[in-house]
Length: 489
Image (tube, rainbow, N blue to C red; front, top):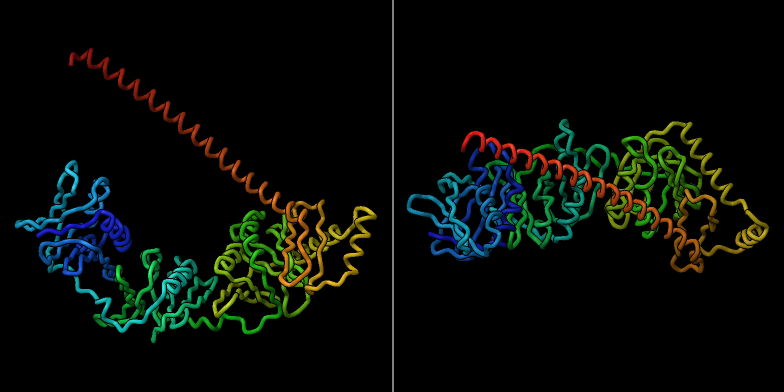
């Protein structure tokens, strides 16, 4: 009995099946894969008893059969025979499984195999009543994974994703996100986060999704024409997350999408000293100022679309949480005074909730002093002509409802963004926009230069170490030659 498999198909299957297996499995059988043939093709399956993954690939078999072989040995042979295009697995009368390639220079190898009857029973991925789930919804589920807890052992539920009929929820105790995705599941599913659940192989095509019971346990199955993935659901109870969502907020503002992209590239370059890397947000009725942790140094000022109270307010939040909200497409922040939760949202029902960083009254005073100092320096004209131009600007009506802001050329540490509003006659100053772009180019060029110097130093050190090893090798060779002559060998 023999099976013929394409190398490309087998290599792709091995890459995903390996994600289910640990380096030291509790049972030797869990390091194996089952390869079964039928009229429709081949199916390769791996399991760790909590997950079951099958890959359907094309192949030929002279007789319907099933082989259970060591995955590490199979993977090793595939990596060794890179010039091969097909493999043949043959089961001999001695119950051995031998693998060979279509290239003569690759020797045949005997793989470690297991009796067919030892393979564990597993849920049928096609058995549950399934609903269709699009690849976009599967990607939405995957986008929530970074918010799942990886360290919280006291609350095992936070190590899982909560899958609802219209959304996926994740939290690590610091942040909570809810992302809309249509699953139409009749029951909630608490899914442990796994390597394959995070892989692109799962979300590259539309699939079916459903929940089933097997051996008194609940399992979630996701299957398509290529993959059949089944995972055991957690028995834990997910916390009532709706209680942490702020019902009312006094301040909110919306970023323009162009500003979000700029902030994602600019914020990482602000100065930070502590591990939390907080940034200070100072909101007025016209602008938002983002200051670094120590308040001094480069800051970012940009117009925003404010809602609610016009009273100035400051909020300190973690840089990573702010950038995480931007990466999920949330362009609106809402919050109240004090240590109240921050709500990040966008279009649709998706949102993110997280707690701000506690700040002292002295820090708030320093922020206000820095803002007032910046505003006074920005609005001070340097010449009579500039003063006249500024007075003309203030007397003109503003069609967008936002006051124009003048930018001081004497403060390169502050970056002002002046976007073009749709439906408005106000346009960005070309010279100011050019200066901002030049500043960005200089910053990134400085980074590239630093990286280049670092790589150059590493190469120099490696060359020195290589020359030293060559000298030691030559010295050892010369010593061996002398010993041979002395000993008479």
